Amino acid sequence: MNCEEVKIGLNHFFDESLDDNTQAEIDEHIRKCPHCYEEYKKLRKLFSKLKDLQLSIDPPATIIEEINKNLHSKAVKEKAPNEAESEIDRLKRINKEKLKQEQLLKTYRLEARKNLLNDKKGYSTIYYNTSNVQKRNKFLIYFFAFIILVMGIGYGYYQYQRDNSPWKIKTETGTYLINNKESASTKLEVNNSLKTENDSRVIINVPRTGTIRVEPNSSIQLLTAKSGDNVISFISGSLKIVTNADLPDFKIKFTNFDLIDYGASYSVGFDPLNNIDLVVEFGYVGIRKADSEIFINEKYSCKIINRKIISTPFRTDAPGEFIDLVLSYENTKNTAELLDKITSKAREEDALTLLELLKKASAVDRQILFQSISNFFPPPIGVTRTGIMRLDPDMLQMWWEEIEWQI
Figure 1: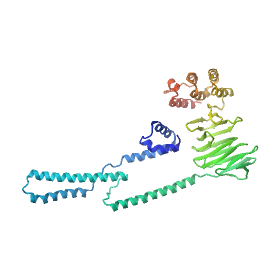
Figure 2: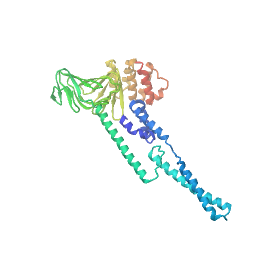
Figure 3: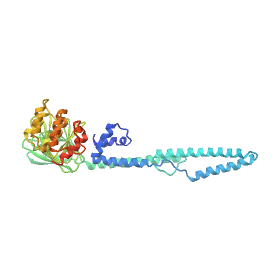
Figure 4: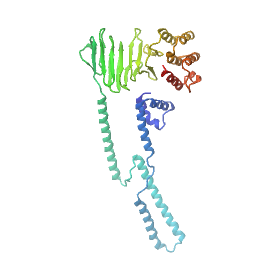
């Protein structure tokens, strides 16, 4: 679930009208995402104020005095022609009139409370005639129209401030093509493509975000150029990206997935078989598909086979034989012999690779991998063998964090 979906669903999240899975997804997202957590706090504050809304009002003292005066005057007027009536009949008549006036007061209070709740404001003034109501409604229409206008202008200015195009191009060697034509321009506009030749290499500066080094025989296209939403399409070759913002919101689009930059230094490129190699030197990068996201931590690498299948991440300093065994394990049904070789050659630094491999393994192979990981890093308190065997996500995360900080 992304930030936009969470913002749309936050209102329903507070009144618990979502299904359990969506409710849980939003809850998990706002715990991890600082921006959505801020939106959540604002809405929580608003709903808290609405809960404190006054549920009843007291009518002006003049109304109550008027009712008492009416009761008294009627009793005086009716006393003269009814001197002969009994004291009991007289009290009954007065009580009947009193009940009538009390009912009138209740009706008044109910109507006033209804108006108050509809307005969602704590007005102390009660409007008694149609002209006042019309004036008030007209004022509210103009007021909210003004607010919407101000918000529209503010949003437009905000979007204008976010715009960071064009991106500047600096040539290291050779020449390059803009939209498949040789160009001397030092600017890359939105929707323009850039392609380097055999002997050319360029560096693109992304304002307030970082740099993209485009290696020889590489091609990219600039899709979006806004602070907080920078997107390129990577077509061929290899790139080196360095971002220096805490949350750069830089994205590389592929056909079946996106690479999400969470503040990192990394390389991405196509190998001779058209698979994609991702190597993270610092920070971490997310590989986001339609329904999931995998995080590649610093000093780790992975392959995306045929631009679709994400391999198990492995340490960049892992022996080549170990990497080949891990990649082979994912593409064979006869895993027993391979798994013995993997666990025998695994180092302490490869524990996270084994943990990721465990998520893809059969129930039998999970037992072997669990024991192999435990030999390096015993499960922390709260993580059990049974929980790991059923792939409990919370326990897997706890064990991952316990290992990650130590290697």
